Length: 256
Image 1 (spheres, one colour):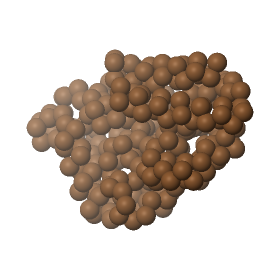
Image 2 (image 1 turned 60 degrees about the horizontal axis):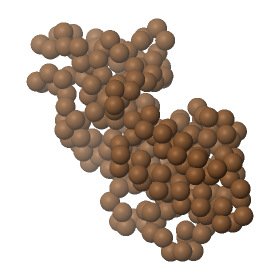
Image 3 (image 1 turned 120 degrees about the vertical axis):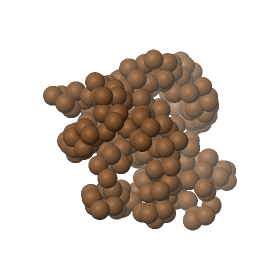
């Protein structure tokens, strides 16, 4: 029975467009987690309890797993929790990444995967400074911060994919899967401001939303842009597309 949930979770990840490597990692983590709680005498039938997570976390700490490995497994369980919620196997989110992830000693890991609220607050203040951040870059940062789109999906956004009446963005993900993402008012406003500004561009008739000096912006340009703001903001964390995506997952996906 428990293995059935692991298989269903695997199918859920595939349908969500996760890469084979990510699926293998998540499924392996959940198989280990389910095996642990079964060995503790639990007959797992889809209901996730808070103490299962804390007990497993303590077991990993006592077994001297690396901090990064523990945090990766907690991320996987959070995703599993969301899967169980969406399919009505369990009725609450019991994983809290801010509480359950272990703090990483400075310099012990190259990349911290989730922004703290203080880091996001500093980022937002900086983004609203028009002397430092242009309309296009502000829109890009808003899209990353509030939608969780992958960098490839970000670059592929067409103007026609945006429904300004309903404040939704149609995203074309991996495997051709289409999903609709709600847009916060500030994101919609930033898009409108950028579209008004880019009217005079030689590529203004291009169907892609985000433009550079040579037309539609590519993922390398997005990464370069994020490297620039990483240096300017000095958040103590690299601003990468995956960092934004994990932040969104920890704040939005768990509440849907």
